[in-house]
Figure: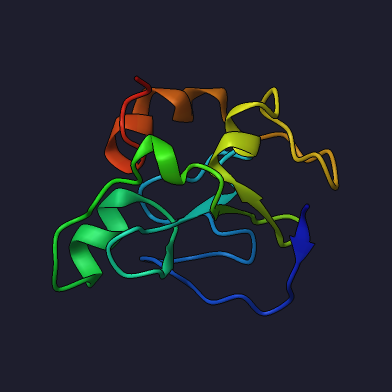
Length: 113
């Protein structure tokens, strides 16, 4: 189930309205990730490192059913598993996501077993 929530707080450095930050600014960089360690959405791991007072803790595979990915276009919250199966577009609004983000999954999500 996808929930749309307006005004979901996202933290980051130089954020725009679609959750792009100083570190990732392409047209496709429109997701934020709820960090396992603090339950707060951040635009990226680099923003978390700059703004949080603790290290990132990755989501273990057994928790991939938790809503932890936010579409910066429509505000839909996706589970990690749903996000990984989207084909790089939001299942609610069809906004395109950056396929290159898959190269960073290990910073946020534990390795599949």
